Amino acid sequence: MSKHAGEKDNQHQGQSCVVEGIQKIRHRSRKRLIRSLRGDDKEGIREVGHPDNKMRGPMARTSKEEAVDRFLTLYLANDGFSRKGLRSLPATRLQKLVFLSERAMIDERRKGFNFRFIKLTYGPFSQELKGDAEKIVRAGLLHGNWHVPTDGTRILLDDFHDVIKKNDAFVHHIRTVNDVYALMPLRQLLNVIHGLPWRGGKTINDLPPRTPMLYPMKPERVVSEFDMTDDEADDLLMNFDPKAVNDLVQAMKEMRTGKLRTYEQAFCGLPR
Image 1 (cartoon, rainbow, N blue to C red):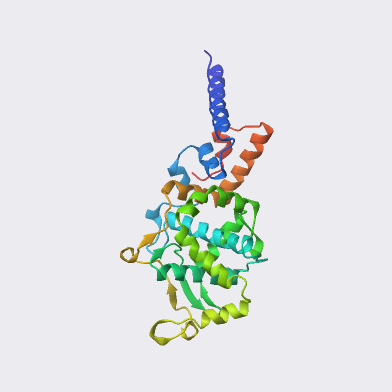
Image 2 (cartoon, rainbow, N blue to C red):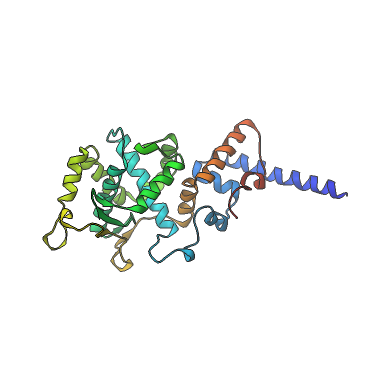
């Protein structure tokens, strides 16, 4: 057999595997699609925007904490729009709703949100939350500066319905915060937060600028932790990665048109 014939056979063999894989996942949920196309390559997953924990600083969140934070942030935004009728969710209100939710979780020693908040002029602020919100927008799951949920948001939350169900105690805090504060006029919301009690008989308003306010609990203080497997966290982080999402959209388009790419063609642009 000639070299060219062997190459041709190998090429067809690779395409056959891809076709078989596509047939198996054609009706699978969004959260499984990227993994099925890439294979269960967790080392590769870590390379797509999620460096290994060994390369992180001592104050940085783990990959799973990032997945939980982005998932709960997306859930909070969607709950505000779908259940409470919000028309917009500007950054200042998003920061305050997440702060109140995380504070309620910490009060019950539940490890859900993992954002660090400090006191600024307009109250509690988290740079990590700001960065996560920007990444969620770039991934097409929230729209623009008003953080309006997209169709992709509803699809993703539906795909991860089991995660929401088994963590009802955590999302209950978010729903409670939205019930009270989501539609509250922003000035009133800021006044309420500034008036919240703090240590030593003070209020948040009394704290000097840049005072640390919330940060992840020490493990020995945690009574319950948000229940998410490593596979679920990997799936979520892929959905929050703009490059991976673009490849997903392209793959879905090609499935509908019958144009299929090999593994190497589909993901040759991903970091190695």
